[in-house]
Image (tube, rainbow, N blue to C red; front, side):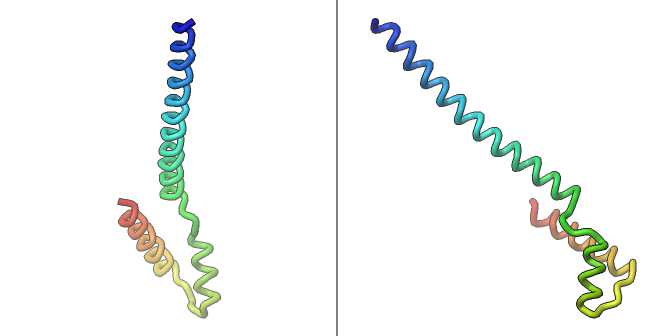
Length: 81
């Protein structure tokens, strides 16, 4: 009878440890995936930026839009490190 109690205890302990390891690995895997996704697909596009500038009363040129997008990407890369 004592041997069965030890086996049940070990089984429960292994299950809890596996659950914790899986949860931690899943969290960091999802976090890394989202960081890469947002880096490759920024939440703001040139069209959105153009609309915002027009609403602020500025006339956006393609050069200015491209420059602002590059600045935003550089800032995101810098803050991501």
